Length: 145
Image (tube, rainbow, N blue to C red; front, side, top):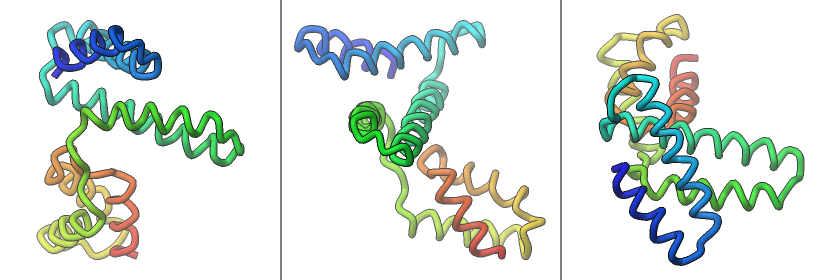
C-alpha cells in the first residue's frame, strides 16, 4: 500500500500535480511517523488507519470551513479528501450500516443508551474499516433512544 502511494507521488512529480503531490507527501510522512512510533514497518491495516484518520481530519476541516463560509478552503479540503479517499476501500451505505447495527443490537440484546458502549465496538469491528463511525453512531442513537 505504501509503495503504491510512493509510486503515485513519483507520478505526481512528473505531472507537476501540486495538490496531489502535497497530499501524498503528508500521507507518506504520517505513515513513516507511525512506523517510527511503533518501531516496525506498517502493515496494510495500519496504513489504512492512518489514511482513515487523514480522511476524517479533512471532513472535519470541510465542516468547519463551511460554517466559517470559507468556500475557497472548502474546495481545497474537498480536493484533498478525494485524493485520500482514492486509497481507501469504498465505505458502506447507510442502509448497510443500519443492517449491521440492527444485527448487533439483536445479538447483544441492547435495549437502551446504557448499552451503547458494548454495541458500538462490535459494529465497528464487523464493518472492518468500511463503516463511517459518525453514521453508525447516529443510527445507534436513533435505534436505542
